[in-house]
Image (cartoon, rainbow, N blue to C red; front, side, top):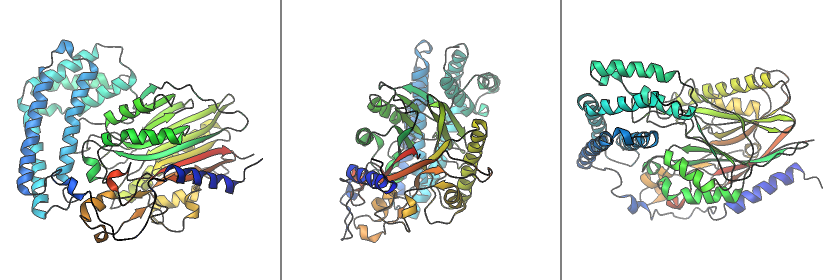
Length: 507
């Protein structure tokens, strides 16, 4: 018996509500924040505490540098060397961002000013360490020289090495080292590189039906920032306290393809792989370029995209955005799905610019236009009917009337939001729990809850530069999966809900 569109959507909605039943219960009684006291002492809240925090950071930098340079070169292989740089980089990222973000935690202006000053102190200290400690450039150069003689590195590893080399500022080192570093940068930069890591899971690959292929897709921003940053940006517990429950939920939902955002911490991506490898056949992680440590141009974070699939993925590709903010090296990952008769679907997953203040909305428009341009290239190259899905945390507020929202509504089918006339606590996909934790303090009534719809799974229906585009008669049906309860922020799996979509051909 043929299932009607309305019944399909209702079925997805019921599945979504059942999966999130433990989180979804909304009421508007007086709300208190029993978790606020647990956060005391996590971040510096006075100028004196900031001073201690800065001194701690400089001391940790000393210890990390000494540990790194004391490893014998014969024992320093690729994994433990870049692992040490990651450790230093993530520590710097977390601590520098915290000093720059004390206003979020409700600190006084005096403390915020102390944080800005502390940020500058650590930057100067880091520069001094790099420019005056001869063992650091010696260790780095020795490692890079060893990598040049190793022809067995994968394209992903060469990309990683290139990012490490390009992060080094030759001006930090004496003239002799500067020339060697510049020469090695040039040689390493021409090696074949790949902006993501592929890992094979343990599950048997699933095949699509030829006559009427269909698949399910899970889209979810998991807020896996380094260290304690989830508490500041999202109001979540650190990723390592949530990752097992997140993986359990993903396995329970059993989607054919999983597209995650904000898997910024490399260790979190590896943990997800270990927890999901028995369920999925293919994984793409550590997606996008990154820098090592906190610099003027980046907080040292890659795109945060993570893809798991039961289906074979063809033509995987990561493209960085031409224009992006300073916090994250953003871009989009796209790939195709095929049956025995060839390609039938392209999927694009991304995490667009986050901030609503200028230039955030303009950057989102330019980033979405870049994705549309790549879609056009793939459509023209494919030269046949094909379905195209875009999913991710697009950071485009529903009903905001910003330019990127016009592009979405004009050119994509959005089965979830076509039934939403306004954003409510009941239909939201996102809620800023950091506001609840830090600004509401002990009484949640003191700060209004601001629900948002920022996450999308949509199907291309037309293209602004292609007349008569045919999407192959595909359809998409999407439901939201609750992943949090606004009254229990420290029990949430994320500050975002997930979306599960069914995509198929209507014949």
